Image (cartoon, rainbow, N blue to C red):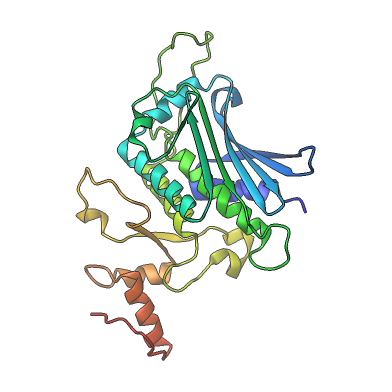
Length: 289
């Protein structure tokens, strides 16, 4: 069964905050490949994401443009927050048994190694493979939801390294005249980057009550959720590097409002306890103050 590439592009765009255009093709083995490319940029100077959908298997690849050298250099200069997001998302992917391949300047590297940030990135091969999925079966999670979840995780990892503001470049030796293009991702705010990573790690359902807007209201509400700072932003130092796994959680508007009914905010477990009390379920109710 072929998947709707435009639906996938819309969801990845929504959850990462970066617009993607898409097209779909089928390879010689009959596998569908959905390609996503940032909207509004010359493909030769930016990147693409290929999502190959096999039987019970997904292969996701980062595809740099022909003249994407300046972009790769900018990614290698990502700030501490971007690097933290990149690592957090990929660690979660490994926890879920995905295989990650990162070849930097022709050398195999691990994404967690600090040494990868010491080099100027000239060539980058970045792939994620996930097997033993329920794709093509009638039971379990719908195929499209599986594809969507892994595509947004992979995209969030890539986008975390994109420059947050206009990146001023200079002509670099060895590149054709005119090949250097400003990497303008100034629309991509810091909080959007962390939000994308949090959703890639935790999903878009409320961690307290389980509310999933897409399943409740349909495709038009897919991906909608609020992201709650476990520790209020006002209490974080200016140099604090947010860990999207531990510091951010998705909450529906109701649970988010309840969280802030107290200072410090109620934890997710405490909100679950409040919900159990409200429904008359007294089993394992957390103490809340």
